[in-house]
Amino acid sequence: MWYCTKRNDIMEVATKQQSIVNKLYVICMAITLPLHVFNMGGGEGLKPFHIPAAIACVLSFFILKKNKRLYKYVILFLMSALISSILSYASSAYSIWLNTFIILTSCIGLAYVDYKQVLKYTFFLVPIDVIVLFYHSIVEPQYRYQGFYSDPNYLCTTLIVFIFLLLLVYSNAKKIITKVVIIGTLVLTYALIFLTLSRTGLICSLLILLLASVDAVKKHFFKFIIAAIVGILALQHYATTFLDNQWELMYERVFEANDNVEYAGSHRFQLSLQNIRFILDHPQYIPFGLGGGTTIGVNASEVPGLAKYRKSPIGDHNTWTSTFSEQGLICFILFAIIIFKTFKSVKGKKSGTNRYLLIGVFLSIFLFSFSVSQKTYLPFWWVIFFLNNSSLTKIEYSSK
Image (cartoon, rainbow, N blue to C red; front, side, top):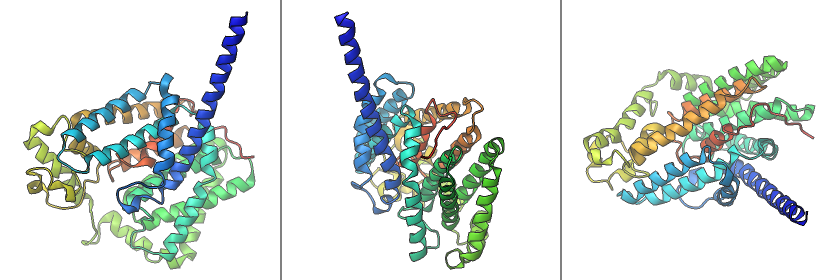
């Protein structure tokens, strides 16, 4: 009898400790995503978002000790990438691997914690991010707005994740004020995507809205979709100071009507082939690639003979081809397995309230992986592991 009581007490303490670990992890990840918006444009080195991400990285090992459904593929991916870094001539390979390690191991816990808590804490920070970005786009206008990132497509990927989270919260929000805040934030978010002139961003944001409308019809809030579209059109009509000529510029980007449009689709395809041609001519690099960062023009000179294959200093924008080029065939296969398992996780959801929204954000992130390299990009992995949360079938969030 005494033994059973003692055992129950130990289990109760362990459960409380695990609950504390999970909550700390959720808070760290809720901070990391919005904080990431302000850190990518400054080059390599330690950035503020790395601090909560590093803490989450440590906490994730306690969360994952009994959950190995996806964890083993991530570890194998990181181990293979480390071997690639060891064998690489590139001086940046180790720092890129360390950044990848922190990002993947910090985000993977999102597949196992209470997703409702993640939504709760993240929701209150996302509108602040969007307002700051929108204000920044007014005071510092750019031809293609990229926020604090180094590429407009990176900003668009983050905004796509924001749209996804906002729509999840909205789907079961109870208070009118919560819905008003979300609609207002979504209108500003779509305006920001339009300002980036990102073709992929425009397609993906509309795809999410289209598929979310399927869930919306079932939930009887299709009027929200109409209100969002009307709001976007109204914003474009009246806010001429920051959306002047945007329709014409977007037309040129989408249809490549301007010969001076940088990084046209055909040009990006050629960029992706540069390193692959070199590897196919030097098959010893096939298993582990050339090392992190070697698809970027400035690092190509560090690999003997690679410079001759480089016709442009611009880096590879395709996540899949850059993974094969930098980390090799083994990492490419493991990366494909992780993405495929995410697809199975989303496809396998029962017909809950948000099934089509989940499919929409997966397809959007998948499309973006062909538009800009996402291997070391935290929002990409954040949403990939969040979609692997086994309980993410029907959101039951209520604002209090």
